[in-house]
Image (cartoon, rainbow, N blue to C red):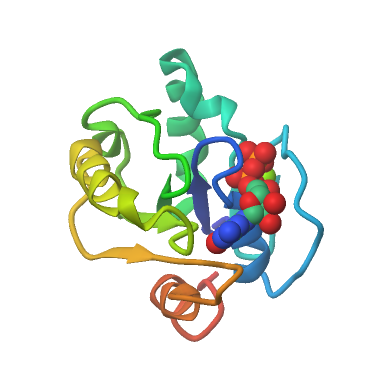
Length: 150
Ligand SMILES: Nc1nc2c(ncn2[C@@H]2O[C@H](COP(=O)(O)OP(=O)(O)OP(=O)(O)O)[C@@H](O)[C@H]2O)c(=O)[nH]1
Ligand SMILES: [Mg+2]
């Protein structure tokens, strides 16, 4: 059977690649990611996949390779990009994450509301890659011992 990975979904610039690099124990210079990238433990999904609903069928197909799906809501720019109930498209567990929680603290409530509207149940995680907040807790939650089982 193919190894299942953590699939990371989020709007443009929300910190997807920064998070997957962390989950893969890698560091790189963040740049726009135009393609689906399979990493050691992760699948990094380009933001275009959530920006139009007709791309959702591709997301569903890719989710066959996912053990869990991380849905990012960007606290620094929490424009609504997901359809109401988006999470019910998927069969595997969907985890709600507020990224860039070091920025625009006043947007926190809006982000929590968005995660609820997307149809994700708590617990939600707040992370900041720059300030190293919540990111180890999330990594433990997603990967357990540090590896995804084969
Ligand atoms: N302040 C802050 N900046 C962050 C955080 N995480 C990522 N960034 C910055 O946000 C920018 C975008 O990060 P990426 O990881 O490339 O975001 P992405 O979602 O992969 O972006 P696209 O692939 O272009 O859709 C980079 O300049 C990162 O350094 C964070 O927690 N806090
Ligand atoms: Mg990226």
